[in-house]
Each structure stands twice: as C-alpha cells, then as structure tokens.
Length: 52
Ligand SMILES: Nc1ncnc2c1ncn2[C@@H]1O[C@H](COP(=O)(O)OP(=O)(O)OP(=O)(O)O)[C@@H](O)[C@H]1O
Ligand SMILES: [Mg+2]
Image (cartoon, rainbow, N blue to C red; front, top):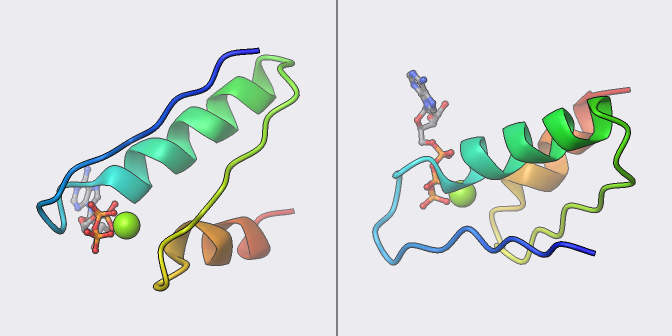
C-alpha cells in the first residue's frame, strides 16, 4: 500500500487540487484508493460528494 501526504503550510498552493486529481487518477487506473481530508474546510470531501 502506498501512502501520499500532500503538505504545505502556505495556503492556496493547490494541495487539495493535487490530492483529488491523484486520487481520481489512481482510482481510474484500477487502484483501490482512499482520500482522507483532515482540513476543516473539507474541500476534498465536498469534491468527492459531488462526483459519482
Ligand atoms: N490549474 C489551475 N488553474 C487555475 N486555478 C486553479 C488550478 N488549480 C487549482 N486552482 C484554484 O486554485 C485555488 C487553490 O487551490 P486548492 O484549493 O487546491 O489549494 P489548497 O492548497 O488546497 O488551499 P488551502 O490552503 O485553502 O487548503 C482554488 O480556487 C482552485 O480552484
Ligand atoms: Mg485545501
């Protein structure tokens, strides 16, 4: 199992964009994928809710 953490103290540097794109790409490539969103903004979780 591979675990990737996308971290930066600076805001708006596209951490969520990169993490969600990596997760979707891995899933489309046939990898069982879990994306954890620990940010109170929960923008990655909201993105997941909007996708089927
Ligand atoms: N390729 C792109 N072109 C233009 N805008 C983009 C692109 N990728 C991401 N953005 C926009 O940049 C903004 C910041 O991206 P994102 O939310 O991924 O950053 P973040 O590092 O997760 O921010 P935060 O620190 O608030 O969690 C968002 O509004 C996003 O829609
Ligand atoms: Mg973010």
